[in-house]
Length: 129
Ligand SMILES: CC(C)(COP(=O)(O)OP(=O)(O)OC[C@H]1O[C@@H](n2cnc3c(N)ncnc32)[C@H](O)[C@@H]1OP(=O)(O)O)[C@@H](O)C(=O)NCCC(=O)NCCS
Image 1: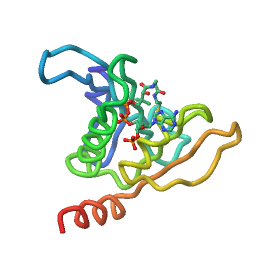
Image 2: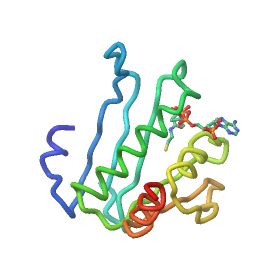
Image 3: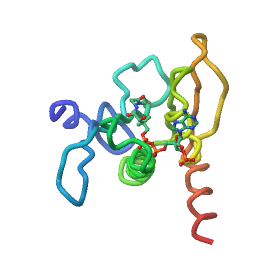
Image 4: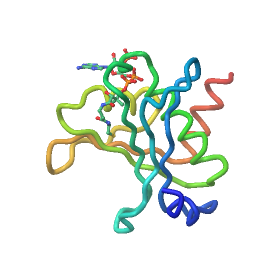
């Protein structure tokens, strides 16, 4: 992970994997990621995963929002995509909540999402007003 991270630079995301740590206890409860190892894709993908006993508290949404902030802030990326398996309604819902645009289903019936920096900036300024 550190080797991958060393290849990241503003405007050029290779792979970033971050731990999700519960602030109250310091417990490691999951991870979230921006990934562009598959360079046939036009832009990096966003991923997240949490220990099951921490689901349903808004924590993945908090982590995903932080990833967007980092991606479109310090990393200066122009767009991201995300996907969820057909049965993974929670992941689909997280992408909706963070303001990603629903593109439809992919070849396997999974849900496809994307977001541009312009849309992120617009969403963020609307939330501030
Ligand atoms: C997907 C995952 C990260 C979500 O984590 P989480 O912390 O529970 O997510 P949040 O609490 O931030 O948000 C989940 C949302 O989905 C909703 N949801 C969950 N299960 C649902 C279901 N079966 N039907 C409808 N909505 C559902 C929740 O109500 C919540 O929406 P709300 O805030 O509008 O009520 C977690 O389920 C997970 O780790 N799954 C396994 C790994 C995985 O699938 N990762 C995604 C790959 S991109």
